[in-house]
Length: 531
Image (cartoon, rainbow, N blue to C red; front, side, top):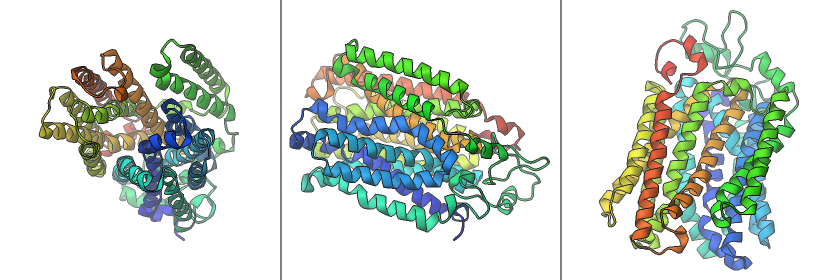
């Protein structure tokens, strides 16, 4: 069986299965929560933990599982993620009580974190830099398809077979993904050619030196990947086996203390942030969680500084393109989810649309986004990442501003055009920005970089929803789910969209000001050097 680097699209196909399934895990059950509430006899506040448990588990575990993939091999962690996700899905479907369902959802989130944290790294290792943007764009398309198709599939299943069916559907997908990962693509120890150490080359196999020479087109020694050591007088080819420094890093113990502190600190802070409006910003629970999260975060920083093998290394955080790319990704997802959280209430409230009509209108944004993402990745491979990413973030900001200025009774064409512009902006931005982040990461820390990328996305979504609820309430709109309509709702919605647009414009500024990766200075001029 050939190494996965010789079959890059087979690797991408397996990664896309896990990406699609992880996205479905967060979107399938959303519309079924009212049925969970009815069947288990709990109130809406308690039932909302079915959604929160998944998001919190993913957020807390993304970075640790990405770092674990760097140490044990990304293929191993990724393949195990299918099994964990499938087990969590089956246990969720069988859960007899709310407590058992929440616990099973947390397990499902752990499996999703294993997949999300290692998927981009596997894709990056399988493709040469000249095709990285296109590959990551196709992978991002799978994410958007899962997020957009999940509510309709979940609603259809829940209506005809009960909410349990929304979980059962993931079990055969998990099984198929695990079999593909183990048998079709990654055969052998960590999916690397014989003689290579497990985990080398991102756990997805190593591209041969001949392939690296071909990629260089005979142009002489090629520059090392960012942060990767090279032998004297010889540069490392793309996908070449990891340098001795990477092997030394894998020999060090895994930073379990840092992983526990990071997950606990982030969970406490996110619970306080997302529950602040419901519990009260100054309530003892919120204040206590904020204090606990701050204390744990300080402890995490202290442990990291003393660790010989930290969860977040200085070499990774020293890459300006990576850090600013993560900041831009956070702002993009926060801005987009401020809109996505309030949009269904706006359509069915002040605009008086039926649920079916509102659903059709809401499909415009993800449809345009999915159609654009792969093309933007292809474009970034040819002209560099900054231009498409900046154009995308600017389009997102303009689209959100357009939503805020449509007036109290917007026409259908104007509304659809604004949503299409939001989708176009997100689609143009995502793949180039992801390519730039992954390209800036040292080779032996691709898993950690992928974990941070997924972290920026997930935390950005949660913060966007929390910010939308807080701004909407502060502007006199009340709680979105409790208001049927009225001018107060419309005015609060438009004000919140202006705030979202401001966040996207901040993201455009960050994208325009980003520095090139440190290693790019030694690279020849051209599109790749401009990423």
